[in-house]
Structure formats: structure tokens, C-alpha cells
Amino acid sequence: MHEVGIIQKRLAEVEAQAAQHASFLDASPLRHESGDAPGVSLPRFIFLGPQGGAEPLRIGIFAGLHGDEPEGVLAALELLRRCAKQPALAEGYCLYVYPLCNPTGLAAGRRESASGKDLNREFWRGSREPEVVLLEAELRAHRLNGLIALHTDDTSPGFYGYASGASLSEHLLPPALAAAEAFVPINRASQIDGFPASNGIIREGFTGVLHGPPEQAPQPFDIILESPRAGEMQAKLEALVRASLALLSEYRQFIAYAANL
Image 1 (cartoon, rainbow, N blue to C red):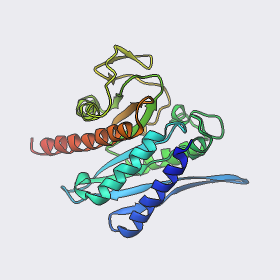
Image 2 (cartoon, helix red, strand yellow):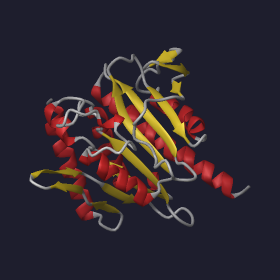
Image 3 (cartoon, rainbow, N blue to C red):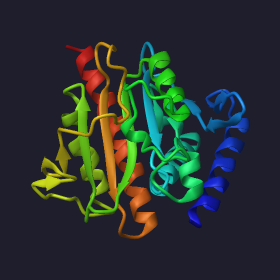
Image 4 (cartoon, rainbow, N blue to C red):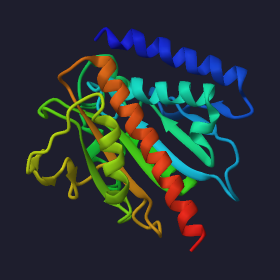
């Protein structure tokens, strides 16, 4: 995939931004060593937005769990780039961004990792996949308030999303879909990806997908954004970025409203 070179370039650019803005953007990759086997390294960026209240809201943004979905990887990196230029976009937040969760799959241009596993069916099932082990440890360590996962669906004619975790998820998702619709169509079919759907929202899901630790209470909001594979790359990328920013804006407003009740 020619996108691999573009992704490497964008990663280097965000790492350079982190070096220039160390006070609010940190680049600290995760590493997993496994004896004689090659180690696994996952890029991780932590962005601390301007203070917007007492304690920053902790949001995780995950992309590239499937190696053949470069759109989400590029969108996560573009989101970081924009926040570095306009920190107010992340006001009140600490963003934990994992833009490339399956580097071996990306290098091979396939969905699965080098082990042949679909990583997004391995979470909280006792998996020994190093990428899953690293991300589960992060999820437990940071007790995130919300998770946003960026994906691409090669069978869908339009953008859609999964809403799970906290019940708030299904209220946050419509504004995100509205933001995406300015760039790509919304899939409004009554069944998407094998699940019942309504106005581009699915409320069920597959076993083993990335989500908050089962023991965490309260559960974080958990949203998966799915861009269609077909279409112009820049439009799909923009749809994912704008939808993610809409989620951050909507959740910020919800927390502010709840604090005043």
C-alpha cells in the first residue's frame, strides 16, 4: 500500500511536533518484548489540552487495529496535528492517541497481524497477542472516560458507527455522524455489518472488540466510527476527523451540563 509511506511521514511529523511542544504533546511508544521473538512497538501520543475544569477528561483514540485500514491511522494523526495547531480543540481533555495498533498488519497490507489474528476479536479474552496485551494494560492504567475507535468497512456504501459501553454513547454518536455527512454519505440501511441499525447507528457488536476493562465502573462511552472503503481518501479522512472532534465537543458539553445539575 502506498499509504504506508504516507503514514510513516505523518508519524515523523507528529513526533517532530511533540519534540517542539513537549509541554502538551508527548510521544512515548509502547513496547512489548517476548524473549527471542522480535519485539512489538506501538506509537502512542498523549495530548494535554488547555485546562477546562478540575481534572482533564481522559479519552482514548485508537486506529489501525486492522492493518488494511489506513484511513483511520491518517485521521488519528491528522487529529493530533490539528490539536497541536489549535489546542482549544482539546480543551478540558487529555487525549491518549494510539494511531497504529497493528503495525505488522499495515506493513503486510492485510487485516490481521503477523500472527494471523484479527486483533479486534482478541480483547479481554486472555489473549497473548502482544498488541492486545499492551493496549489492555493501557486501558486498565488510564481508566478512560471514553473510547473512540476509527475503522473502515469495505462492504458499506456509507459512514456509520457502533455505540456501546455507557448508555451516553448512543446520544453522542448522532452529532458525530452529522459532522461526517458533510464529507461522505451515511449508511442508513436497517441492517449493517450483520446487525440491526437505525440512522447509521448499531447498538450491538462483535465479541472481543476493543472496549473498556470489563471491571471498570462506570463504563466509559465507547464509539466505533466506520468510514466506507470506497471514495476519495481526503473526504474519508476528513469525515473521521470531524466526527471525532464532534464527539469531543458533544461530550465536553454533556459534562459541563451535568456539573451544573
